[in-house]
Image 1: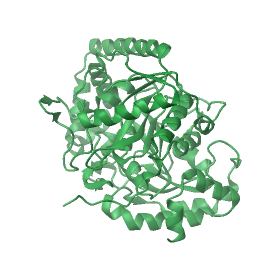
Image 2: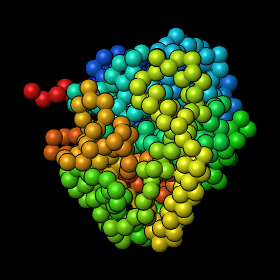
Image 3: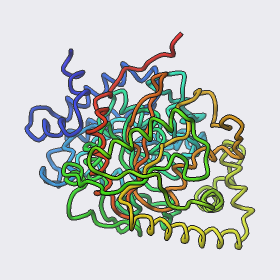
Image 4: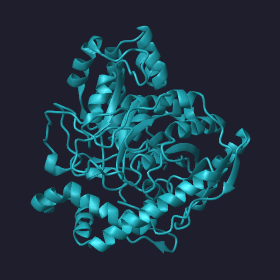
Length: 477
């Protein structure tokens, strides 16, 4: 096996340690990443925009890094992928939209600046749904991103390119963003780990929705300790983001490496309002029950999520008007139909509807807080169905149940979004057809470190962390 192939199969933590010891250089890692991208990306279309000169220039400047080698989140020259919703200075940044197909920004988003300052080297941009709308990664600029476990199927979205790049070993770490599940869903569908952190840990923007808590950015990785390293690399206060906060005293990686044990956890297959594929239900529940081996009492329990769909419907539409309303006014024919529908729904909202949704979200949050007085953890399947045909835009229904919109099937993740609680998707098994299933793990408010510890504990019990990277698998004939 060539040295580059050996490197791409090592964990991010292992490779950062090699960088720390000087046993490998950032330029050698860039070459290994590029070789792997050339070998596998044509089959999956995860990284359509390369940043080769940007990456090599950064690698040559690595000696001037102001971040100490022992500091939390030090990446030391590790190649990473950045979702094509965040600007990278001097690199094509499209947001998956024809409107920005040729846009090259002069400045980077805050989180990109933070990652580069801590030694992350942006080697490629990962594909996304147009403006992050929808949980199937496709757009008119770059086309479809395919699931490496079966290239005829979707990888989920909207952070699908990042999930696929990790699952196939093209990079060691990647970022994503999450409104209704855009980190968690592709993580589930690709058998990697994706985390929606609590609002504020990762400074983002500058953006129109600076005070919004529905959408956050977060880390993606192949295992929980690597995920914690990436969150340490992303976390920090920046005055340009009014919600950002300093990182915790104990690093996220330390919490993952020294996990506490939950005393009591709740599992819910459907949060009380969704149909769920029986096989997915069974795999997720069996994984959740594994925490019992660590001494946790695992019960069928969840907060009351009644009203979550309508709260999300209103606040999501309002957010689309704030973020994309100016583009709608100027470029409506160039936006995909789902985005147009979202914005127009927001334009027709009444102040009474918005006020009611805000009040009901607060009531939901208080029910969740009450739940965490008795439970340390909430677990659900991440997605209600396994990966589906890549040419199908979204899940229209299960059995006799029909969904009203293209986002209704995302209920298990968007309901958790409304709470602001940290949540991640952990690989928890495979269907009889060999397709990945993820377990959504939800922690108490701002209990991100605690959640990472519980996830690390369950990851060890399940023994699935070494399943990736894989070579893309064509559909069986």
